[in-house]
Image 1 (cartoon, helix red, strand yellow):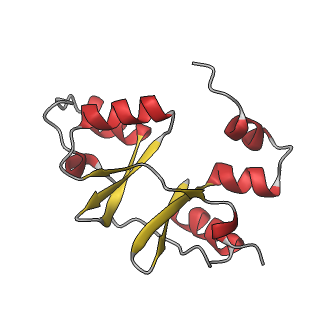
Image 2 (cartoon, rainbow, N blue to C red; image 1 turned 90 degrees about the horizontal axis):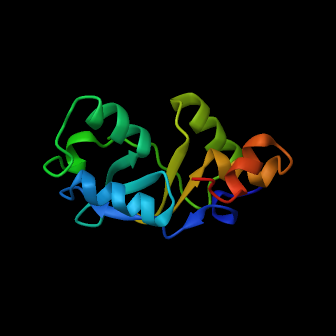
Amino acid sequence: MTTVGEFMTARPMTMDAGSSLCDAARQMRDADIGDIIVTNGGEVRGILTDRDIAVRAVAAEMDPRATTLNQILTEDVVMVSPQDDAVAAAELMRTYSVRRLPVVDDGRLVGVVSIGDLAVEWEPDSVLADISTDEPNN
């Protein structure tokens, strides 16, 4: 059995739920990532993706300096533990139509696993694996 902990991304980017959308977008740009785990008092509150920024904030003409992550994040996030079976994690992604799962151990965020991580692990010659491991082109 391959576990989530074997190929998750450790120490994912986190931000407080009260942070501004501008700050989150800058963090994503600077770290070249597409998601941030949103916390409140150290607890996972939700996840924010670059798509959330575009669809929930920009398309609704929300002021990115005044909008907080709490206002547009995805709540009720499905989470896994590092000991969980990777196949089960993939099934959760399919069931809930999500591309990323925060990885929590004893209530503490320890990583994030993405559909790209799964592709790199299981189908290294796939298009998704190539895209996931390639240098950004923008």
